[in-house]
Length: 192
Image 1 (cartoon, one colour):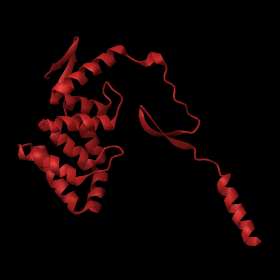
Image 2 (cartoon, helix red, strand yellow):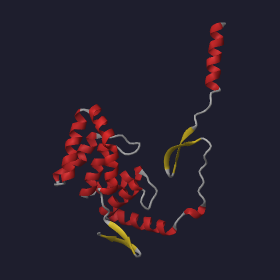
Image 3 (cartoon, helix red, strand yellow):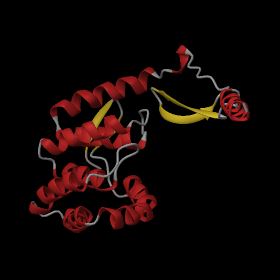
Image 4 (spheres, helix red, strand yellow):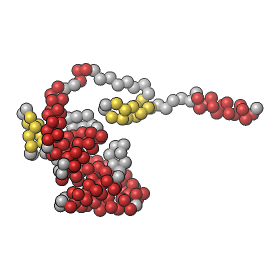
């Protein structure tokens, strides 16, 4: 009887325990932990038609030009003119890399080496892309290729190194990679 009473107390304390203060919410703005009592409100008037037109124009351009696909991926990574979306960032960046754009091949290698948001690192995939870019003469890719090779050999040590470097590398995405296309007047123009 004593065992049954203890079991009932344990079950009731588990069933009636206070729920966690936050819950994981995933919507079109990404995933985040939010207070249980929060609500998402998006009035219809928040859409900027000019920003939507710019995005549509860049998307059309990206389908034709890998440099624009690279830019679109970078903009999705940064949330620059679009909502931040790591999935779209990787898709567009990888598209540009597959079409042979050298900067994108290095960037994709870096993304796979460091991991991106919810995606963990993949040293083997990083090594593949960085080998291609390094073979084409990219100095950054050569440096990162050595890291990818080390990472494949010792993932535990590598993960410690990644965690120590993550803030630096995240900052590099903001300052180390430049756009190719810029909005001027009423359209996208190539060049700085």
